[in-house]
Length: 185
Image 1 (tube, rainbow, N blue to C red):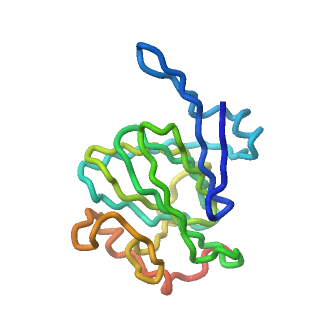
Image 2: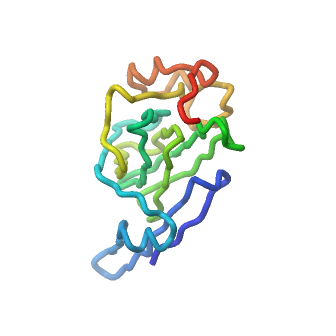
Image 3: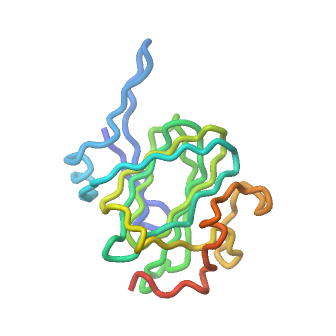
């Protein structure tokens, strides 16, 4: 019922649930702790978050929380589509400073597992996009951090021009990758 595969950064996983369809529509079990644990994902998710972005080209991220409130996330799209980006901030990792990106949409039954030690962000590809994610630690404003989404040093190919992206003032002011102090040793 559950398919889990590693992406180019092996610690980032794409999770696909089986969809059962009939004349009424479909049913899909998106999370069962025991099924996830059988596939090596044993996070204790304690908070659910949801965002809705009105416009195409809305960018949220690249966000993370510093220890001891660092979060693992399980991200899925309920409506619309996103380009989801995960950046490795683990200083001792062979993929430090590298990223992976994947398109998630409401039709694929795919979820993205983002571990602690990564920054996460996305750009909407459709209007009225709703993103839902589970986290294994509560939000702590004092531990909130981020990296500027359009930092050229990162080489992320976003589907929106910098001048056209819809951003929060907080996300506009995030530091470049090179200005970020060590967060995850």
